[in-house]
Image (cartoon, rainbow, N blue to C red; front, side, top):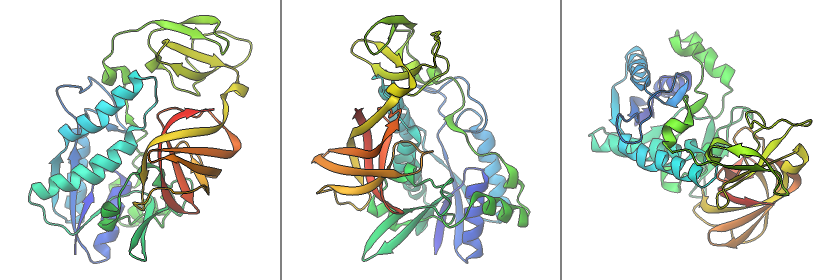
Length: 356
């Protein structure tokens, strides 16, 4: 069986390819090229980011890895898809005063979508696609389940909740049963130079304003009662839950509570004002392919670094759900994703539209 492995030049994808080769698969390496030189392409950025001008170095690193593993290697041009799907969504959401998660859109529609599609258009023959994500895929009664990785701190299933059944059917995730330390040890034991290579820390390493390409839009910074405390140069420079860099002096720590596009206001307040009991999510995606029909007890995550917490989810209509948490949650950011779990199984989720 031929397996196409998405190689990033990092330790995770490298060991994924190694494991599959050791299991007897015919492994092919492929890297998606996403750094555009025109249009919305930014001017800087730095290392340890997925999107940036040092992409050429990552590609050469991946090429060397493929040579060391003695597997074929290809570069697939996904620049157009990345700019249209990821960067345009990123810019549009920030303009609306929302905080998007570009990694989720990249995974669902570029890395697991455009990359294998472009590989086939380039004439690369393969049976299944694999990556170095820490998550698991299992088949049960003709359905494919997306499950959390066994290492809670490294689990990346949150980023994959928008994958569909057809994608899961053709997907292998070799690292889902490992911890990060185990993967680095495998790399060391096999003499791979990437064993200690740092992980990517963000999707872009430079100033987000380089990607947004927006002119300043001054407005007021206010407290929850509407009192003006200062001014800002654009609501997109702030995120809900932000504490540092607000520029307002106070005897107690202040946090960004809300970004109001209509009035162009940044609302700030004390820590106790950051907690919310529930949220509404839209733009839903269900891994099983079947939407939620009734109220359900679940676990939920509102950010990638959070462990799932108990909640009740209620369907509102075909494209809206309400998630009510057992305990109040801090800094629910509009534009981020709420991902729902039944134990280790990813049910699906949606983009947070409001919270209260």
